[in-house]
Amino acid sequence: MRAALTGTPGTGKTTVAALLPFRVIDLNAVVRVEELTLGTDPDRSCLIADVEALAERLEELAPEGDDEIVVLEGHFSHQFAPEAIVLRTRPGVLRERLVQRGYSKEKVRENLEAEALDVILVESAEWCDRVSEIDATALSPEEVGALVVKILRREIAMPPGKVDWTGEMEFDP
Ligand SMILES: Nc1ncnc2c1ncn2[C@@H]1O[C@H](COP(=O)(O)OP(=O)(O)OP(=O)(O)O)[C@@H](O)[C@H]1O
Image (cartoon, rainbow, N blue to C red):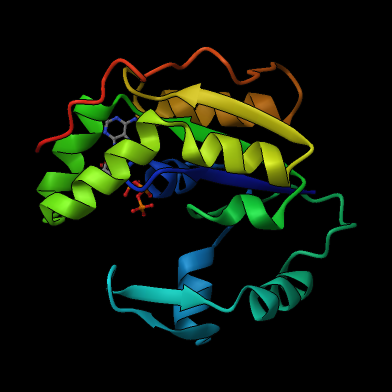
């Protein structure tokens, strides 16, 4: 069973994925290492994933019909799994992380806007049959990881709808 661990850049996907007791596929790494790209986006200076080639490769790496829980990690992973767990982080906290990474003011603002406007959550609802949402703002990576495990093992449910940051649209980093 594939599950996407998704969310705006900086919300903690990579950190949490490293703690999970499941096989994890880092989609950015697969795209980069196997050169499954259509080129580079000059505006965002990032690779453009060849989603068709990636979908085919994922069918080899994690066949949809398998019972094994495989976590696909990345901010567009929700396009390749029937289930998504969306990590959320309050924009004020996310800003610090993205500035610390050295993102440009524009890139920080773009990501903060996406987080405040639930962009990944809305996309996940469009792509996936089952969506969970974790507000990771005040949780440790370990606590977030424990929730991800319980969600995937159907021990708890964390449906979307509790997070609302529309009132936090002050993004000037
Ligand atoms: N729950 C958390 N509490 C505090 N800090 C966290 C938490 N999760 C992640 N971080 C920190 O936030 C930063 C971003 O985390 P991470 O790189 O895992 O995010 P990401 O969602 O994978 O980003 P990207 O999509 O750009 O790869 C890191 O410095 C990480 O240590």
